[in-house]
Structures are given as structure tokens and as C-alpha cells.
Image (cartoon, rainbow, N blue to C red):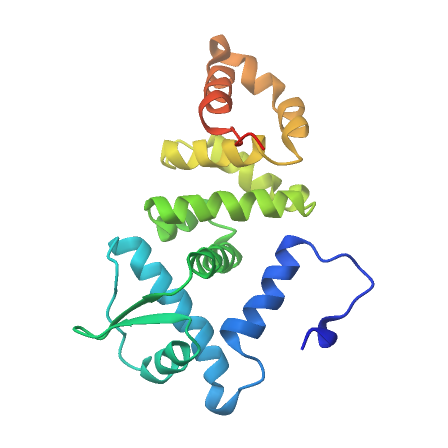
Length: 212
């Protein structure tokens, strides 16, 4: 019921995704036995297991049978008859699930940057959704809240270099790109402009958009 979500404020991409997630995946209108919460957790875990395993279908975890049946009934999951394994029926919802999981993982580990990235792992689908989450969070005007997190990533020697690259790419493709360059000017110009060369390389190879 869209009327319940009516507001005088414009609905941005993040807010629209949340509304659709709650209406389509969680199904707030069906709460018996906490099934709406089970649907949310189950769908995210299936998307995560697929991202980690790179398998087309993943087994149903014990205890998730009711939630899986409900999601299959609503045509949000596809059931593989030979194995009873499942997969998300829609790529968009699968990406939304991973973005949601990244956001929750950050909320639980934002004081420990290294643990945050260790929890994320290294799989490409998760790295893609991390970029989406970070760029979207920056676009929402939360640079101040993320500043310590970003500075910690760029200064750390214990965080894998690809996470630093993903972070820089997200910054460069966000509305905060000019601010990032200005505030990190000194660091970019140090050590024979090593960091600046990395930024320029990433700008060339990873910050491209398709021509309309």
C-alpha cells in the first residue's frame, strides 16, 4: 500500500529500495510467527551464500524452510527441483540484499575497519555492492560520518589494496569527489605523487559511464 508511505519529501533511490524491500521481500503485511523477519534474513543469507560460492543454486539452511517456501510462493526465489536448492529470481533483488547486508555489517563493525573488511570477504559481487553502498551513503550527505572510516582505510597497511581501490573509486564517482581531492591534497602529492598516480589510474579504468 503506497499510501502508507506517502510523504511530502522526495523519495531517493535508497528510500525507494527500502519501501520496495519491505513490501515485496519482507511483506510487512504478513507477520505471523515472525515470518517477515525470517524472509528478510533468509533472502539476504541466500544472496550471500551465492556470492561466496559462485554457485547457481545454494542449499536451504536448516530452519529456513518456511521462509523459503513463502519466498518461492511469491516468486522471489527459484527452486531447483533435482536438489531443492534455491536462487534469487531477480538480479536486482539479489544486489539489494547484498547492499543491505553490507550496510548491516558496517553498522555492527564500524569501529573496527579491519574486522569489517574481513567479514565482507573478497568476492566480486560483494565488492560491487560495497561500492554501491558507499557511493549511495556519500550521496546521502554522510561524508562526515564516514570520514574516520575512509581515512582509516587509506592510511592502513593491514587492509587489502583492492578494498582501498574500491573505496577510492566509490569516492571519485560520488558527489564528494571534489571534497575528497581537496582534503587529501597533501597525501596525494607526497612520495613522488604515488597516491595521486593511483587515483588517476583508477579514474581512467574504473570511473567510466556508458554513453547515453
